[in-house]
Image (tube, rainbow, N blue to C red; front, top):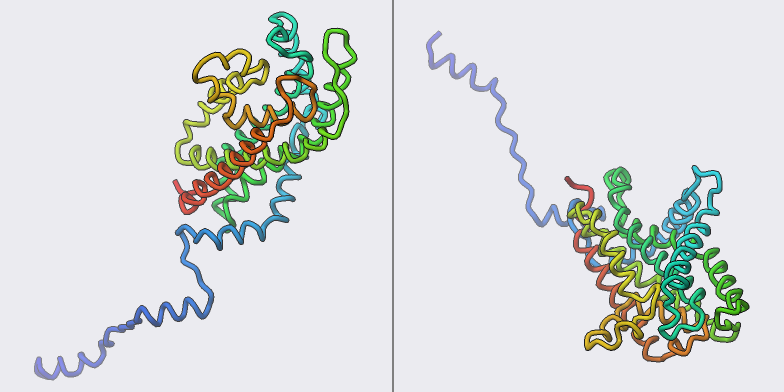
Length: 315
């Protein structure tokens, strides 16, 4: 058999190459028909927010489970959620209220003043730290389940709000009882106490926005997690938690900046609801600032977190 004949016999045994070409239009039509979504990209803002709202039941369950798991391995359990702020407030009252006598700066009831400041700032501080740890401590969930990652910082702050409920009762009781001491001014229960609910709501909204921000930043740069406690400690002293910002810093030309910064505003609102301090009377301007800060930080924080959605959980 000649070489030409061999080629004629062998050639038909080689299958022709398989080539399939799909037009982009047909691919797009198939994606639309089957309601498919491309993975690994940031979802659009409005659908992302709608999906987050649809997961509100999951957020509530996750938040309640986090609140119940707090201190579960200790003998006193959830009682520590009350003991911790009480102990912190007691230390600050002893040092700043009696030894350093911050009451000389226009504060009539130093005990209630410091107790309210410590309880409220502790909620904000723990909310920020919950947001900072929301992604890194739930990385297995982030990598294995498809859901809006904003669920995690939202649930973290909501868990802190659930634990704040009993602490608020203790805070109000201590503040009222302190008014019976001869060294403290009276604290009366009146209609202004009802404003505590919207004040806490605004603080929660503001804290959620801050949690969104730090969650994004810590996820991108984990070293920031080590700097946050130091920043929060500085913020505590700059917000009038244990002394009056107006009395100590108002004399400086830049003092008004600290008076109207968000944390100081929310401390003012809560104190104006509960206490009878002449320097902390109900002020419509402060309420306006409280609303503006809450909405601004909630919106900006959500946008900052959403802008990094496709990067979470990727090394």
